[in-house]
Image 1 (cartoon, rainbow, N blue to C red):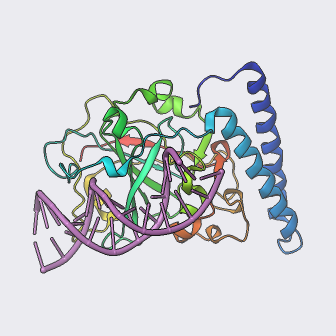
Image 2 (cartoon, chains in turn yellow, blue, cyan):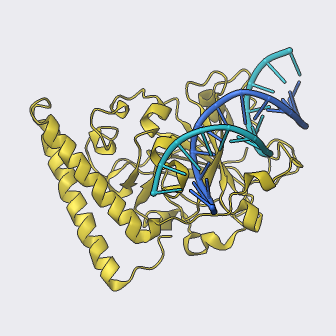
Amino acid sequence: MAALLTPAASSLSRLMAQGRESAAALEALLRGASPQEHGEVRELASEILRCCDRALAALHGGGRKRGPGHAAAQTRPGKRTRTSGGETAAAKRVEKKWTAEDGFIWRKYGQKEILHSKHPRLYFRCTYKDDSGCRATRQVQLSEDDPSLYVITYFGEHTCCHGDNAVLDCDNAKMQPFVINFGSAAATSGGGSPPWLSSCSDDGDGHSETSRSSQAAGSPEEEDMEELGDKVTKIEPASSDHPSGAELSSSPDASCCSPPWDPLAACSDWDIFNEASFDYVISDYFEL
DNA sequence: CACATTTGACCAGG
DNA sequence: CCTGGTCAAATGTG
């Protein structure tokens, strides 16, 4: 994805990035000013940001990459691969503001309300699962602690070759500035834009085993994490502005401005953003 | 028309 | 029996 850019595209990319930066700065300034008066202007700034992001995303290969996606071709042979002990899937958790691109294309295959958890859990698998039998999956859920963070848990490894240009470690992920948000059909359904992309690919270094079975019967997701003793670290925002503020929202009046937002409502307005201005990641390995 | 998302139902583990 | 994970038909969008 974030593959190679032609020189022209590269410079275009830089320009777009610069434009975006300026818009972001403008918006930040406006945020300091009386919000009511500058409401429209802010909205405009947001719009500009959005456009830049989209353009950047397109430049970086954000075009559609559609996989086969024949749901009908599937049978029901092996369910519950996650919790059934056989899988050697390594679980890796990542916490981040948004789901960042990792060069893999994710396809959502389910969503579930989790007991004692305020936020639904979203299930994704590699788009090329059918093609390459890629078994990588991931789960995304809003953090209970900080609703502006997403807890992304990766399972399995990508066996598809599509990660080739993006099989990166976390460091490289930083080089990939784009974030593809996930959300409702309103934003991305219909194959409009690439599905859910995310941060680092799964670890290949042998952390693994115990597939995660968050039998959360008595433990909220939040606790679940603590229980697991993972050490999730957060990297402070690159931009010192309000992380979950309007900057992140393509429409200022959207629902995603308040911390405890409804992930779904917020998602419906998501689009592609440049991660440079967002909170970033950090990930950690842990065995589940 | 092709393909991705949505969403209710099904299945299996605990 | 409850809950989480996955399936797959229906639906929507480009």
